[in-house]
Amino acid sequence: HIKPAGIRDTYVPISLIEPYSGSNLNAMGFDLNSNPLLMPSLLQARDTGQMALTRKMTLIQDAGTAIPAAVMYVPIYNNTMPLNTVEERRKAILAWVSGPFRIRDLIASLENQLDKDIGIEIYDGSVMSAETHLYGSGVKSSNLQTLRLINIGGRQWTLAIYALPAFDARFPEETQSQIVAGGVTLSLL
Image 1 (cartoon, rainbow, N blue to C red):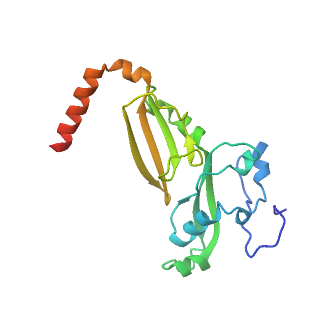
Image 2 (cartoon, rainbow, N blue to C red):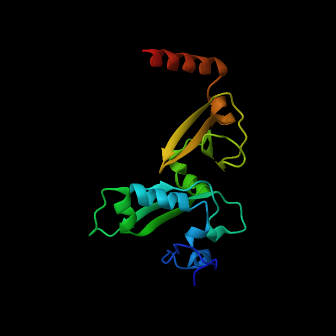
Image 3 (cartoon, helix red, strand yellow):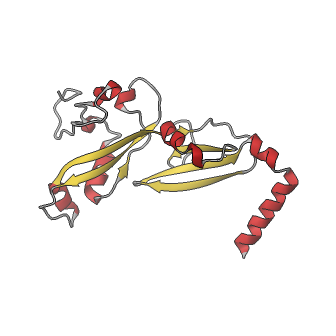
């Protein structure tokens, strides 16, 4: 059954999901075309032939919660048809493969690669606000921080990276000044 019910020009229901159990069963039959947060990414992936990432959202599996997530979509085309132009790709689209993920789970999977004394805040887009906040505590306790903009699947994320108190304790203030001076010097060279 396609859900939610209703007449739409196009239906894009979820027809396969793994694992096929638990809260994932809530997503079966869900029409992606009924969610205005999803369609721009589906259309971008279809038209470009490239992976596209949604903006901040809540997965249908997590309905009723406020767990920040995103979904990656990759188009699947009928390869017997030409795919050189946007119009050709639109005619050849068969489906999309999706990769939904909760941001906290993504960061948890990187735990071994991240320094325990460094804090990370992630925002969807270039505006750092509660509405765009994807990950982190929101509490910065150090003057040592940097911002990085990254582009993923047609979306821009802002990463605010900052030192936690344990990091500051490893490097007294006079050492921090020397590190900064050294970094500036190397950058100029």
